[in-house]
Image (tube, rainbow, N blue to C red; front, side, top):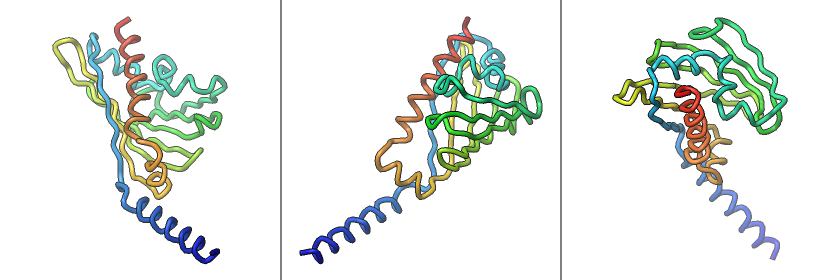
Length: 175
């Protein structure tokens, strides 16, 4: 009887490993929103890490979040690091490209609760109403990321947070 249980457990482990191995090697999550403001207004909130507390949904998760700023005050070369509770973890972001009222590109590094490197891009496209802002994140799926994707849909989870942040960005930009 124990032999059958052992064989069954081994089969389940192999099936789980195969399921994890077949998950995508990369991911991309993107959301956008229309904002009734000139493109330079929301761009200003994104391009300056000191202003992220006004709109980023990640800023309110840990009331004791420790923030440090380095490099340029805003734009290319600006760096922001954080250290927080288990929900926020720790990491840093660096603006690697800043095109006024057009695009902001960030290299995003997570240290805790897991190590990851992602590319985050904010694109500001003029529209008849003002501007459409897209917030996108892409990266590689490590084995841990692939395993987590079996239980959690990254697009739904992260997309919901992006939608929340974009709604806040809209409110502060239109105020």
